[in-house]
Image 1 (cartoon, helix red, strand yellow):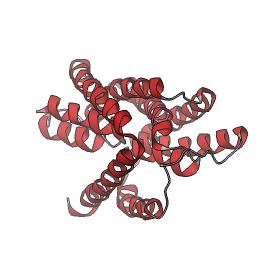
Image 2 (tube, one colour):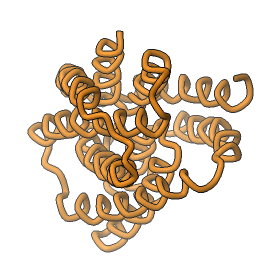
Image 3 (cartoon, helix red, strand yellow):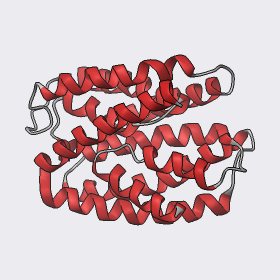
Image 4 (cartoon, rainbow, N blue to C red):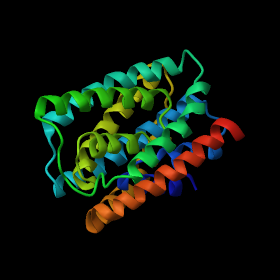
Length: 247
């Protein structure tokens, strides 16, 4: 069951992001005896492999702005290290409580526009790099500190913030997600929270799901990805609201 969940997480994450909504609850449900930090490191390990695989698929379909990706990825990595370390020091209940309302505002904001359907970059290179790096820092910190839906946030950064369409935003947003996952994983590994066997097993399943999902998304284009985005964010709103107020 855990491998099936990891495969589905990789598939969903490759299309729009948010695979952690499936993979993290599955880990806590099926491996209850493990420390929470170990389960989070296993999730990051699997996600890194699956997300990298799907990012390479999207790169073959559309050329990526590599300079922008490298700068923003460095920002995401460093911020994620800070977020993951802070997670070990303070409670995160206040962020959990605010998250569903923040997501709802973003969903309404995007429903009112055609963001992601047309590729029309909004800014010149320096301003584009600055916006991407600042946005990646904020999302990367969140990914290290809490994490659900970070992939969808990265896609929002490129579609709404920079004017990319969904297909051209796919690879850059996934490379940023890999960077922030890697930053958080480094912290967990340094602190000794790791299970390599479980991480490798889930990584294989996540990779397979990512390959299936990315090819499907490339075939069906921006309209399909936009619909999947709204469904994913809607589910994420319900999930984060339940986690914050009803558990």
